[in-house]
Image: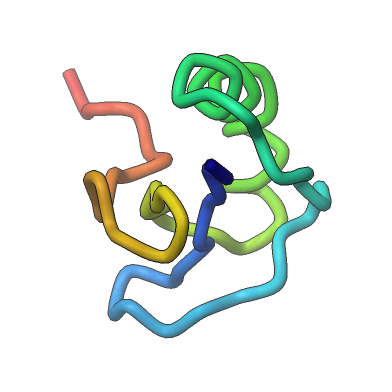
Length: 69
């Protein structure tokens, strides 16, 4: 099984990530990675991400922007 992220603008168009991810062997590894790099990815032009397992979308799009308080 391979877990991968897709990086998108807010309109759903794919963008190249500022930090190149690997393929992850578990969902937890993929989520830990996004937790570590989300700010750099957002600053690099990604607005949202989609998590897939072997090409099947598991969830997303998930915003990389912090909620306004």
